Length: 259
Length: 138
Image (cartoon, rainbow over all chains, first blue to last red; front, side, top):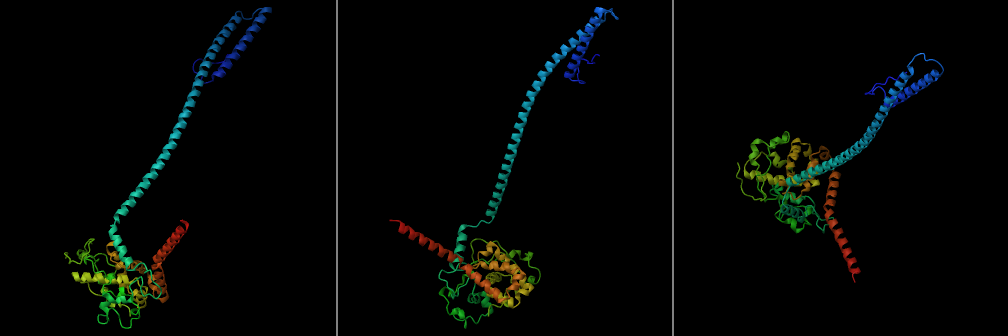
C-alpha cells in the first residue's frame, strides 16, 4: 500500500513518479480513514486506535508530499537554468564554427599568396640568371637585322639572290671554302661559271664577311678530340680543360695566356 | 660543287696551340651556319654524310653553339634550329629528298619575309589612319 519512496537520491524514480505515488498513497489512506470512521459510527472497531494510526500515516505522507513539491519547484528552477546555459553553449558553438570557417579561408588565401610569391621569386631568380646587358642585345639585334640575315630586305623580290642563310658564294669565300679551293677563288669573289655572280649586289662582294666573325678571342672553344667523334659524343676532356677560358664581354683577338 | 666536308676540321687532329684554336673556332662558326642552308643539307645527305656516326657525333658536339657566349657570334642564328632538327635521325633521312630541301627553303624564305610584311602592313595601317585624320580635321 505504501509507496517505497526513500528520501534523498531519486535515481530510481523521477520526481514526477514519486509525486504521483505520494498522491496515490494519500488518496488510499484518506479513503481508508473515511471507511474506518464510517464503520466505527455503526459498529465497534475490530482494532482500537487504528484510525489514529492511519491518520498519523496520512499526516506523514502529506509531509513527504509537501517536501516533494518543494523539490519539484527547485528542480524546475534548475532545469530552467540548464536551458539558458544550453542556449549560451549553442551560441558559443556557432561562434567557434564561424571562426573556424574564417580561419580556414584565411589559411587558404595565405597559402595561395605564399605559393604565388614563391613562383615570383623563382622567376626573378631565373631572369637574373639569364641577365644580359641591354646594350649587348641591341648590338646583336642590329647585327643580325641590318645584314638582312633574319629579316628580308624591304626591296626583296623573287629573283633576288640574297637568302636567309649563307649562299654558295659566301660559303666558298669563307675559311672552309679557302681550305677546299685555294687556287680557284677567282676575282673579287666571282667564281667562273658562277651563275649567281651575275646579279650580285654590291654589299655581298665586300671582302669582310661578318658571318665569319674574326673579332673574338680564340680560347673559348669547347675541347675537341676529333678521334672522339668516332665514339660517343665528347664530354669535356680533363686534359683540355685549360683550353677553355671564360669569355669576357669585350672580345679581342689578343693571344692567350693559358697553357 | 658545294663544300666538301671531307677536308674540314673533324677529320684532322687537334692542334693545341692558339692559332689552332682560333682557326677551329672560325671553321666551326662557318660550318654551323652553313647548316642553315637547306640546299647544303641536301648535298650532305645525298653524299651519305648523315649516315656516318662520326659526323652525327660531330653534329651533337656542335650544339655548344646554343650557349649564349657562343651564340652571340652567329650572324644566322636560324642555323641553331636546323642543328637541333639534325639531331633526329628521321630528319636526316628526309633531307635526302630534294623536295624536302626545297620545301624547307621556301618556308625559310617566307618566314624571312615575315617581318618586312608585318612592317609594311603597319605602315599601311598608319598611312590610312593619317588619311582619315586629315580628312576629318577641318
